[in-house]
Length: 623
Image 1: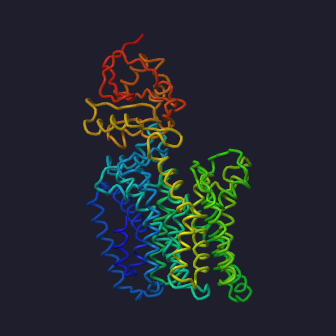
Image 2: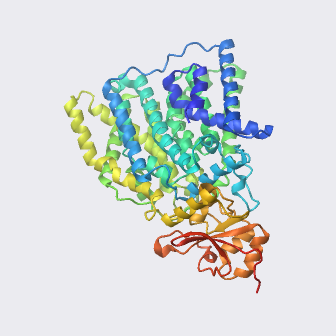
Image 3: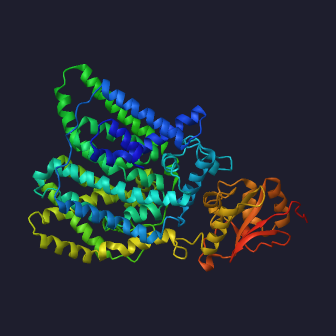
């Protein structure tokens, strides 16, 4: 995730601290650019082709730097920090990673959430067809003929280059992006703010950087909800790039800003919805910063050319916003009307209450974080220029408002959250970023002259008030995505499923032919995990061919008729699980045909407990 981008930025002579933080975004951009290039060239997308492309990009970067030098880059480098800062950063990374490590239980565990199935199958499709461009790569997941002409696959393209199996690759990427990328971005943002306004804030050198990661670790929204439970991985990956990008833009140094621009493009190709997140974060601040200056300049402009440039800039901005809004038409169609009280949702966002799945949370911890964040906002208002304090506070309030109306029954209110699929959990990372920064500022301000004993006491008190950094609920939320029997919304694959899927992975299917089953149970992992030809590749019936849909809905009632239809269309194997929702299993409401099926005349391929795979006969008996 870091290496390709770091090499290119290193060739561009970007300082290593900034190069490290911006490297993942640039790596994603390189993956998408390379995948699309080889797609149109008819060349397979492999590690070798990408290595060759990376070499050419590095050489071109060195050549450009030689003929058009940007000068040495020293602005924006953080002041050397005391040892306490590094202890805080390391402790924060550990606290971020602990719930993932404990809750996941190992990189070989299956991510049993809706989008988790999709992304595992996407990884398999890229490796199977050697095509990773967003223009086609995920078409094999849409077998009903309604495949999208575009689906963002930069994330899948990048991680597909890993030599490890799909499940391990997917989970390892979650570790990296949820801890190292998110953590380094927050640290960069704190360092930029401290370097630019540390004197005005009156805080110790390195204190904001040292506190932000341990404090960010106390929030449940990121990474415990965002990555495993929500499992919208391309969006999650894109949004954790935002803090580092903003930090680089704050430096104002040309070379670093150019690097941030490349990382921003990587963020956009990873998931275009991240544009809305970035706009929400920097938009209010930019308005407060530049609109007053623009108004003063407009009155002072005498050249009609200068006025024309301003008008063109405004027209381009308005037109771009309109086009982006039109492109979101499919996303705006998501309706999550639950009758939620907007006032309750606003307060829930303020205390970092997850909207997806309830855990045994220590609510006092969320209240404490909210109180400290409010105090941090007050410190900022008293110390910093109005444009930054008003802008940051406005972003916080708007993000809370958007989260509050995401599940509203009022259509026009819900449209405010439509760029985020009208889902509160997708807006929460923005709130978490702002609140973590405000809270860290509050603590750094309160302890600006504290002794080492007072700091240790504060850490212990913070851990007590937050219930041990809310480790229990954060771990429970991760377990709700990985551990059979504890899965939110029902277990897809238990130990019996895992045994059968492992057998299929090791032995394959006896003869040529596709496999089908209920998309909500272990059958959905047969393609992504076991690597067999399965026509059930997503946790939905909508993308299945009509003959598979008919079988999934009615095989138990029309066994003989549907058996012949399936064989004629290349389906030879049926994945069955006797467990239902009564036993805690996840079951598709429309997949009634996959239960209580009479298997007389079929051949058993493999089985374990309640799970079995059957082979249909060459000649099906028709009634």
